[in-house]
Every structure is written in C-alpha cells, then in structure tokens.
Amino acid sequence: LGDGRAISLGEVPGTDGSGGSSRWDVQLKGAGRTPYSRFGDGYAVRRSSVREFLAAEHMHALGVPTSRSLALVFTDRVVLREEAEYGAVVTRLAPSWVRFGSFELPAARRDFALVRSLADYTIRHHYPALEHHSDRYARLLRKVVERTAVTIARWQAVGFCHGVMNTDNMSILGLTIDYGPYAFLDAFDPDFICNHSDPAGRYAFREQPRVALWNLMRLAAPLAAIIDGRDQTSAEGSQAAQTETKPETVEAVTDALNAFGGVFRDEYVRLMRRKFGLLSTAESDDLSAVVQPFLDLLERAKTDYTFAMRSLCDVPLILADDSRLEEHVDSLVSRSLDLSCSPDSEAWKKDMLSYYRNTYHPRLKKEAAHSTTDVAFLEDHSRLMKKENPKYILRNWVAQDIIERVDKVEEDLVDKALELLTTYAFEDVLPDHLKNLEAYAGPVPEW
Image (cartoon, rainbow, N blue to C red; front, side):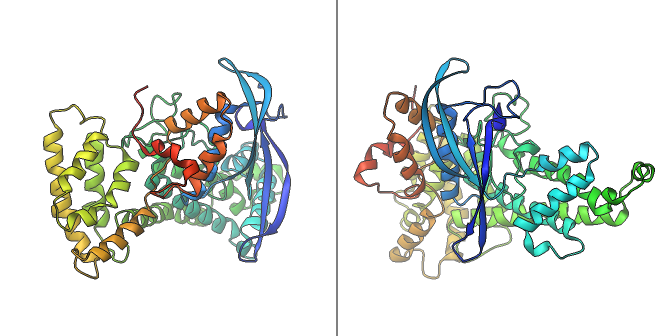
C-alpha cells in the first residue's frame, strides 16, 4: 500500500564531493509487508518499480532535486493487482525521508514534544547552520519554503506533473519523492491531470505551486506550536488553555510562507530565460512579454511541450535568414494535437511566425553580443540552449513501451533507458548501442 511498503535499512554517513558531510537513508520498496502496509501485501510490481527507478535518476539528470535510485531487482514472485504481475524491489536513497506529514501526525495528537524532537533532529542533521539560532524553528520553515519553491519551479519548467501532492509526499528537504502516477507533459496543457483518481484536478499541472504553498501552510502549524513553546508547558490545564498563536509567531510564520511566491517566480524566470536562450541579459518583462506568449500559443494548439522547447534551440539560427522559419513552424503543427487536421492551423501558424519575428527575434538581438547574423555566435548559442532543453523525457508512453518490452524478456532495456535518460537526455547524437531508442524523442505512437 503506497509507501507503507518501504522498509528503511538505515542511514549511511559519508562525505559529499566538496568534502562536507552527507548521509543517505536507504530504503527497500516492494520487499514485503511492513508495520505500515496495513491491508496491503507490501509488494510492488515491475511496472511501478521501473517507473520509479527511472524517474528519480532522470529527474536528477534534469537538475530537479529528487530522491535517488540505487538498484532495481526483478523477482519471480507473482503479485496480484488488477491482474497477476511479476514483482520487483527498488532500493532508493534520500538524505532523509522525513515529510511534512511527519510533523502533522504528532501535532494532531498534541504531542508537541515529539514535534520539537523531530525538528531538532532535522536541523541537527540537515540544516546544521540553524542549530544555534534562538529562532531556529522559524528559520527551518523558511528554508523548507525556499527549497520547496525551487523544486516546484523546476517541475514547472521541465513539464513534470507529480500527481499526488499530499503532505505525506512532500519532503522536508524539498526533494521530489514518491513517484506514483507522475507524468511529463506531452501536449502543453496547464490543466493536465496525470492521476486518474483526481478528476477535480486538485493536483493539475498549473495547480502545483498553489498546492505546494498550501502544504507548507500545513507544515507551518506544528512548527508554530513549538515556536510558541506549547510543548514546554508543564501544567495540562495551561497547555489546553493556550489555543491562540502568539502574534510574534504569526508574524514569523507569515514571513516565511510569504517568501514562497518570490522564490518560485525568481527560479522559474531564471530557468525559462535560459531555456529561451536569454543567457546573459535579463529584462523585467521577459516572463510576460517573451515566455508567456509562446506558452499561450503552445496551449492553444496543444503542442508537444518538450519538442517545442527543444525546437526553440534552432530558432536563433533560423531567424538569421528567415528562409526556414515556415518549415520550422510546420514541424510544430505536426506535433500539435489541436492543429494537425484543423482549419485553424493557418491562423495559428501566422501568429507563431509573428511571435518569432516581432517578439522573440528582437529580444534575441538584445541578448546577442554580436549581430544575430553571426553564424558562429548563433551556433554556439543554439548549443548552449540545448543544454537547457532536454531532447529525451520519460513520457508516459516511453515508460509504457519500456515496461512492455521488459515483460517480453528484454530486461537489459532498463539499463539502456537509464543511460538514455541520464547521460544522453540532452544529446542529439546517440551512441550505437542506444540508436534504437531515438524514437523516444518522437511523437506519441498511434496505438
């Protein structure tokens, strides 16, 4: 049953690449019953295990804070779900698996002493710079707010939809954890819902920043209690009497939560500027004047988001002589669900051409240290943009194809897919042993 299947083996201390201390909390997921699997058997099937194993490493390669995958082991155990499937066990890692919900549970039981102990543990091992501050719990909240805002901004920039953003799936370190019904965008649709059990769209793609902030507000409640010192009230009567949060605590918590919007926006704008090739200059209206109009056009046509952003890398060179621009726009039409056979395609093409010529090109001229007809400069610019816009993404249909081929005894495909989605996610040219995976950058198959 969900992450009730996870078995923690222990923490492994070590050092990071810069010589500082680090620790990894090692878990097995799908190895059998645990005290928290309730009525479930604790096992995992290959399908979900392959998805989680690949997703975590792929997200790391994309620059998104995430848990990590260490190993994937297939078993011969038959696991009954909607149908009988073979099982698997994922070994996964994170510096900590403490979640927002880890603080909510003891607070709901009014065990604020346990809330404080957990906060002290978190600070001691993961935010040690806060340990000697008298306002360390307010500072802890601020740090979690900032890390969460950065992670969600990176989700939005890469087109990742988590699917189950409850507080038990939110990391106290701002990591992406618990890969369940996640998906990467195919068509750019801000209202995209990847979880079939979320018909109201609570966790829709565009809602993720709002939900993240709501979850942070839930985390703020137990932390506010220990900032207030409710766990240190010895007399039960006086503890029960303290029902209102102190004004200074309200102010500290509000200040921390209010940081979310600015951090999220700054990170999202930074990422999108780089994806659009605005690498050395920044205009205050880049988001509203350059990025959003392009996204609006993609939304209108339901254009493939990853393909459109990767194709954008070629536009600076194309704009140098303009002769291939219409061909480029035609390629976007071919990857647009609402345009391929639509009479509206001509109007959309006209609007996209106008965007490139009248909005994007003038902005690139401000970016360019040389003339935008300097081919050497534009080629280098295109190359740098490709480092920001992946060619290969773990789309749902890609994951499904991998799973089906693995079921047909092509088990080495997992290793190849892992290499593709990490080492070669941003590359145009694949080594010979991965050439047969080039189709994973193509359109959704007509199954």
